Image 1 (cartoon, rainbow, N blue to C red):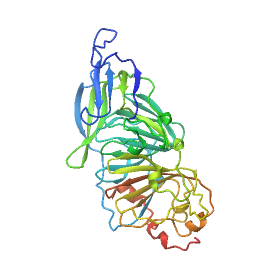
Image 2: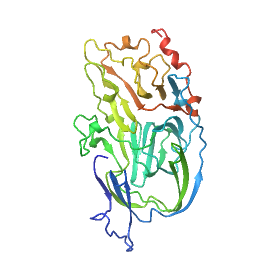
Image 3: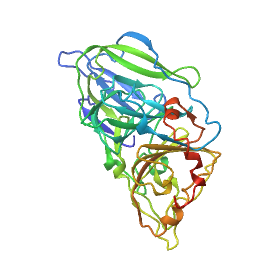
Image 4: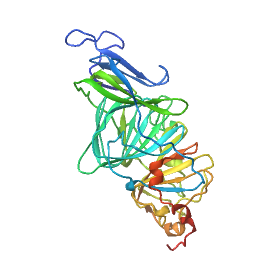
Length: 394
């Protein structure tokens, strides 16, 4: 992260004696990226964070993804997914490759404690609310929030309120950060960035929970790009951190705080970028004034991103370019490399003269092909690929 935080109790100097009220030493835990060579935080535990009493295999039921073959644009209706579960073990995996996996969850109960030891996670809240408990402290999330959870952080999600928690989840094989072009060489947000440090939220105080023989589910690397799971039992509850400091911690950014970049003619998706990850980017399209050239066409032009697959999650407003395609709230479209995509028939003409677009969508562009997971195929609108053939009046 681009700035330093200090929460709770910490000693004056790193790696020096820091004693509990009974005289025993607090246990240090350095969480750091890239082998002591990048961002890190130093946490102080009441108990040893290394003390586990068991380690057993956990095997979630998952079908192997299949290629997008025959190649086609796809439309998945996430609101037709069956049932609700917890926000982590209940994730319905939709699309994946070696760099990331995209899932959707409908959650009405707390998750177990969980650690993703493969990479960072980006969790976008479509609807509902939750309290997120982590070893760094707790933080609340609600509609429009992005939660960035650093790799190997132990956390759980506790939904609350009457509506189920609906989230889009991007699990990375590495780290998710703001785009480098938004940051100075020392990590400060620059003036041209569409958001800045003032827009970010993170845990403000320690979270202390007592407990013994506490289970934590860990997702970690297996052979090749495979992911495997283990269930640890910790001797003491891992939420025993009295203080921490550093530049690595969970943080939240609201899509409603994103300041859109507009121009006289249509702006390409990089103007809407919010995060980057290994071989993928995340953008968001928010309500905004649109192109003000007298001959401007506000909706996107036909385009073929020859190096990437484009995933769009439609989560609010009216996405004018997709009118007539069957896209609705909660829809996900996949426009793969090898297919030229663009606005639906009639959309360019209808958009002329508009000065504002009321749309909300999250986009993930991946630079390796995405494969299709079984839950996505179960809620696919198989007519979507042919909607560009329709009469523009429909």
